Length: 595
Ligand code: HEM
Ligand SMILES: *[C@@H]1O[C@H](CO)[C@@H](O)[C@H](O)[C@H]1NC(C)=O
Ligand SMILES: *[C@@H]1O[C@H](CO)[C@@H](O)[C@H](O)[C@H]1NC(C)=O
Ligand SMILES: *[C@@H]1O[C@H](CO)[C@@H](O)[C@H](O)[C@H]1NC(C)=O
Ligand SMILES: *[C@@H]1O[C@H](CO)[C@@H](O)[C@H](O)[C@H]1NC(C)=O
Ligand SMILES: *[C@@H]1O[C@H](CO)[C@@H](O)[C@H](O)[C@H]1NC(C)=O
Image 1 (cartoon, rainbow, N blue to C red):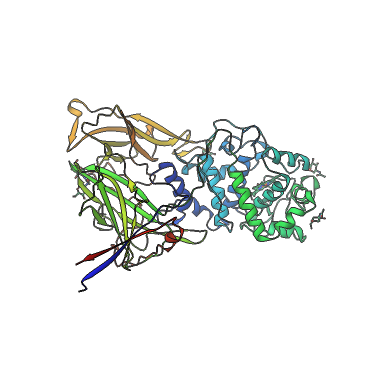
Image 2: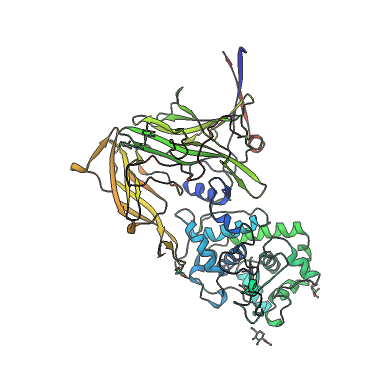
């Protein structure tokens, strides 16, 4: 055997634009914006696949995608930029019965998006995300997305332009919304590259249809009603357009005709160049998305985190053990069957140790994709053993007197280089070990939920409480179309007397909730200490064991594809070239280990 083995340890500084993990709000916004297809994907994207998909009756050319894009404009159109009122605030849900919001597009959209909203992503953010997903999935450019919109509790003033309004009134409505005449022309074209006008909603503009496949009587604005492209302007300019707002028989309602021609066709002529159309729409969609009331603080543009821990959870159990389970996503990576990924950790004193590492599992199903640029990501797991897939445990199991303060990853591509992913030396900090869920936590649907919390002995919290996400109004078990997400806080009583349970280094506090107190939304637990509040991780996808029968080990957080193929050798692969290129600076340390 060779006498020496060269390892190159590469430390990668984080990207300027990405944030430092963890940040529960940005983590959730990033997930909803980027985890689109495949492993651990969020659901919304599937509703525009294919882009012609329509879930609410006979389509006739109607699509979910077009409804979502119309919805964001109608939520924004109440904006008064100078006064800082109206704008994107989810108030469209309370404005559906107005003549300016005729049709079921808004109810249809709310039906799909309300369930995705939670304490970190408002309904207003979902209104924007839906439109963004429709554009990006259906041929459009990548759009800038910021989060942090706040849901209104009251409807706004009226303000959506209607087809019978005059050109002057349209120019002044868009000016109120903060858009110039040129921007108005462009934004209308960018929106109306999707969808059309239906007889059911506008009987005076579009005639009824005898076609059983088009009972809504939909007539498209351009020949590609579910694709982002500039046919909306090229067909207008070459005279082939059939748009009911351009060549409608009643000229009073030909609003797009008046708008496009309002500067002598100068703007639409520029937009007949596809690149100009695309970049103009990207700018104006982003401007529309950011039209929010005064006082709302939006986040930075959400960029993908290159290395993202996911569903990281410490769980106390077995009397005196702590189990760390979770996953990690490597953004923009190709599969590499030779790759070995290790999780390493340091204890509460920041000390690492020779045995403080575990090799993560991965299989070919653990790949996700992002549409723009066809970016692939690989996921690696550290999970408890799965009875279903017979996969052995790759979770970290410690004695509960030891605690993990932070983790990082070592990625060996099998080419002699080991890349350290530690957020520029900071590591990926875990929750404060004073508080974690206990393995007695279980779901007893349909009647109850049992929350068990392990509180470190002597940590002396002033208060321990459950925080469960639900909706302001429910319609059966679903959110009502008028609902916004709310978080219910419920006190967990301090254990005393015979109910006091001590296990290892922790006291167990517990609470059994009836399901009428809450719904099956994401939850976590918080505690107030003298030096501040500590929360357990916020996880939207964790599946807790059922309370019926014996308590099972928590299942794979992904809830999907079993982890059969156990790590090395499986067809996995990626390269960190993208990271290397985009990293701000690279420090390369070479170590030679003599054997
Ligand atoms: C003066 C401004 C505007 C007027 C008068 C107008 C008018 C209309 C009308 C009458 C419809 C038919 C709706 C139906 O039949 O259900 C429609 C559909 C639509 N509008 Fe606009 N619109 C305007 C601006 C915009 C803007 C700025 C956007 C987005 C950026 C937009 C996006 C859409 C979309 C995507 C549809 C298709 C909906 C579907 O097919 O279900 N509109 N618009
Ligand atoms: C044209 O549309 C306007 C606005 O909806 C309406 O008032 C008018 O009666 C219509 N004209 C004809 C000829 O239908
Ligand atoms: C704008 O273009 C349309 C469609 O080609 C045409 O009918 C109209 O006359 C043009 N208007 C001007 C002012 O050039
Ligand atoms: C309990 O012990 C089993 C067997 O060692 C282990 O697989 C499991 O992860 C432990 N659970 C917790 C919550 O520590
Ligand atoms: C959960 O912890 C209890 C003791 O608190 C232990 O008896 C049980 O085996 C544990 N179960 C799992 C799955 O870790
Ligand atoms: C409640 O659900 C019914 C049936 O799905 C639906 O028709 C109705 O619009 C919903 N109402 C609200 C306020 O969400």
